[in-house]
Image (cartoon, rainbow, N blue to C red; front, side, top):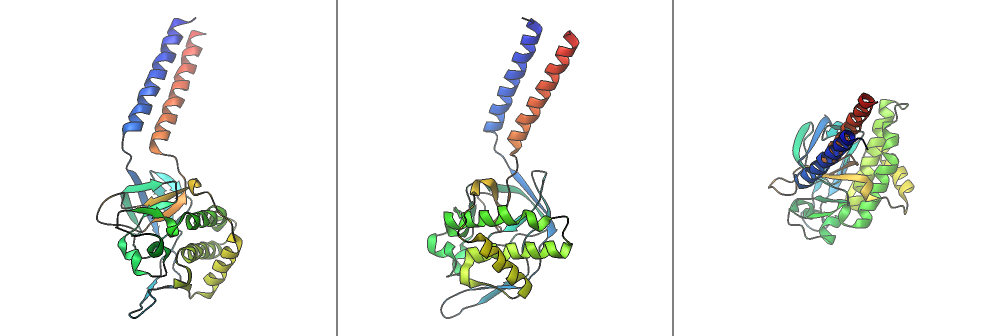
Length: 259
């Protein structure tokens, strides 16, 4: 046995183990950078039913591009809820990330009586609940994003065509969440939304294949709009992978020197 080679391998293994332990015990502060702006289209969210019914309108929706999570470029990122707001462009260094279809929502979501958040959950402003108010709704959103978002960034499409696909997908997500309380005034976007919802049908997606983002983090007074995007590597995983690569490189150089 080459004793020097054994010592080098043992040292690399110990260093790797220490790095794993360090990463396991270090709290991660995920950093979300929304570098672009919203896609504008006309839609309405109606409070109600009952006296004092109000109509809430906004022009913003996904995909918000270009954006990054922990420095990794996101191919797309879409909004989940409506009453909460997140500014774009903007940097959110305390973003909570889950892979179970849940995110944190404010109590303002309960103002929408037709919203499944209000009927399926009693929100305190700090709870993590399923997107749309149930696992089934979250799985429907997961299917929409996983299957339709890639086509909306197809480089062979014109920018206008991709924008319409993105707006239709964003509308389909909100329609899934809010049901009849959400309507789209833009005829082209409404048609695309209906096409997307027809494609969804009874399909359910894998919530674990996506990152569900709460820009305000797990705690704090400000609750920003929840978002969803493709799953990205965790910082600790990247550190471990990088260390492993360096270890193999060093081992290879050591072998070459001894041969």
